[in-house]
Structures are given as structure tokens and as C-alpha cells.
Length: 324
Image 1: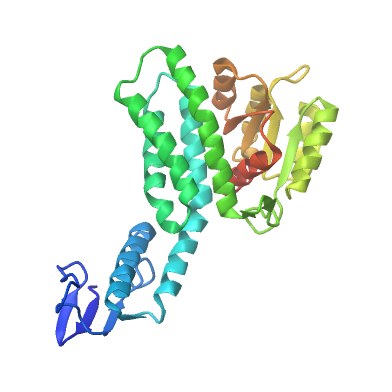
Image 2: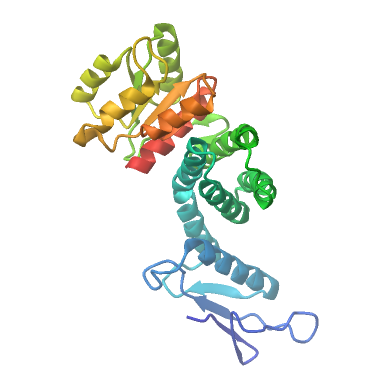
């Protein structure tokens, strides 16, 4: 529905040419009315375009000194923009998961560029939208990664070694983006705001690692980030814990004494009631082969053991939200 602008006895429509206010054409104060895009009156509208449309109307209103009323009862433009901002903020976990999944899929098969193009598309879209919703740093980080991938894809080399080098270059950029996603989704001032999972509770993790000291240290670090952790050192213990509880995420050390993370991931996938359980592998091994084995077994991501606890916690929350 077109917005109605009543001024000087004229009826203007948003989207139609409107005179610039450089003299006598400036309208007198009047009223604007428009339906909040994306709500029940227009269920098919995209929240991003809705925000941009509302923002454009808002700038026009501020310039012309026109008061604003919404057809659905929201009496102030700021309220309308707040609603749209919250919708965008709620979509951030899904956006982060989509970016992470696209990168993981490409890392699992460097010869296939379609996943890399999808990653480029997602980053380009994020770069164009995040700043408009108040996440300037997130938009700038996405723009940096987008520009790098765009230039690389213009003349993508066939050499797998060069593609692996690109993966090593882009990975820290994506980690930084994941940190910014986490900050936008609930971290403020470097601390976790409650650490809730997809249903408002703390998420639960089963950690499989045969290094007891590392398990205890990582468990305490994740608990400080609001994540409950249950530990075991092998596959038998993992299956025992999974028979007692259904965690939100399964975290597997890739190189165990007598087992490997990909084998454990496959064993879990073979249990129908656990087939949808998100799993990630932890390892210090950055080889392409290890990553391919883990992703091929169904792991959502291969995470370096040196990843800071806060970033690891944010990734685990993202994977838990994706599976919810």
C-alpha cells in the first residue's frame, strides 16, 4: 500500500517523485501513514527491504518535518524501526550458521567452487545489510571477506595448494565475523549475557577427549561462558552419556588414543534418534585430509583447539540454534 502524504493540499505517494526542499516546494507539516512491512498486513514482505523502506521514509520525514503514524497502531517511526531491528537481530544465528556451513562444505571439497560462491554471496549480502541495522563492525568485516573472495573468484586457480592457501587466509576473517555475530547476539562488554540455548536455557554439550587435563580446563572455560559440559574419554563413554541425556551439541576430539572423531560421528549418525545431533570436531591438525574426513562423517565444523573459549562458545550456541 502506498504511503499517503498530506501537505499543502497535495497527495504524494512514497515511491513517486517528490520535490526536493530547496525553496518554496518544501511541504508544510502533515501526516504520513504506511503499513509496517513484514507484519500481518503484508506477510510476504522481507524484513530487510522493510527496514530500508521504513528508513527511507524516516529520512524523508525528518527532512520535511512530517509527523508519522502507522496503519497498524505503531505510533512512532522509532518503534517501527526497533521491531525491524529485532527481527534482524533474531536472524543473526541463522546467518552465521549459513556462512559457517558454506565454508565447511568448501573446505571438505576444495575442488568444488559452488560452495565458495555461496559463501561469497552470503558475505556480500551481510556486508550490504548489517551496517543499516546498526552492526557497522560486522558489516565492515563481512565486506573485507567479501572483497577478498570476489577478487579470488574472478580468476580462480585450479591448483589445490592455492585453494588451501585461500582457506587459511579466509578462516581467521570468518572467525572474527563469528565473534561479531556472537557479540551482536548477546555479548556486551566482552561478557556473556546468560548464555541461553535455543529454548532459553543453557545449552548442554558432551565432550569426548582422552586428554583429561585439557577436558577439565575446556569444561571450566565453557562453563564460565554459560555452557554445561559432560566429559568422557572414549566412544563407549560417549554412547553411555548419550543414552542418559540428549545434548545440544556433541564435541569430538579427532585424534583419540584408539579411535577417531570421524568414526565416532558416524557411529552416532547410525542411531536414528541421534542422527540429527549436531557434532563438531576439535583438533590441532589443520590438514585438508583430516577436515575432509570429519565433514564427510557428518561433523558440522572442524575447530582448532587453540580457538578462544568465548569464540568456541559462540560457535556451539550457533550450532545448537541451527538444530533447534
